[in-house]
Amino acid sequence: MKTILLTFSAFLTVISMAQTEGEVKYTTKIDMHAQLPEGENTEMLKSMLPQYQEEKSTLLFTTEETLYKSGGTDESVEKQETDDDDNQVQIKIEMSSPEEKIYTDVENGLVVQQRDLMDKIFLIKDTIDPAEWKITGETKMVSGLSCQKATLESEENGVIEAWFTTQIPVSSGPAGLGGLPGLIVYVSMDDGNVTMTATQIIPREIEKGEIEAPKKGKVVTREKYLELEQKKMEQMKKQYGGDGDGNIIMITE
Image 1 (tube, rainbow, N blue to C red):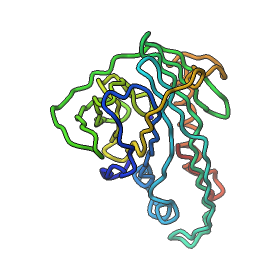
Image 2 (image 1 turned 180 degrees about the vertical axis):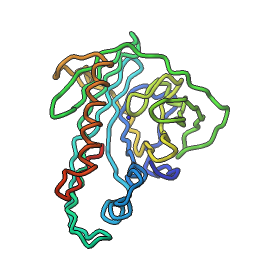
Image 3 (image 1 turned 135 degrees about the vertical axis):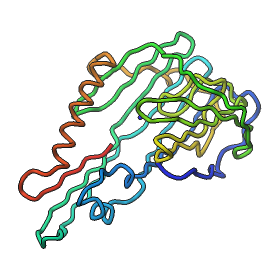
């Protein structure tokens, strides 16, 4: 699953109390410069790589089930630079955001995640692992919504900070996050280098068939998927280190 704390969008729709069905638009903002490993080419890469990458996503929700959809974008930058030894270096940076769907059956504690990896589609079926959130007691108004702060320790993303509202009593949020007594409208993780902000909340009736578990893809366990993901990360590291011909290739997700 990367920026300074964002001001919540003024475009959040004013909603009624106890809204239990609807659609949420989120914007994920990633600090790409913070993702770069320290090295002799770091500053050169920063000069040509946009600092922030933004991704739009949508959450459809009811009290019984939710469907989160994100990704499906690709960007690339190619440029020639001269290093300190006057050697020409060809740099290609590819930024991809694979399409992802996360279906959650809140009532029965099941989750089905569809993800793209290595040009293949995988389905990860699992039970919901109860998150050990700590509700801090801090409160504030976020674009007209009364919100509470909660934190979660994560091995992958460090301390996750979330702001949720019980005005929408749905135990869900962006990127499969949930387990709180209200909708998550803002998330900060990875030391603030990744943020997810609800930019629009649309109260509406969810039609039959709008929320369904994804069915396309090879079914794997979460452990197997993580193994494949680690393999891809190792390939990315080799590419970033160069191919022996002066080319540097970096792929970030």
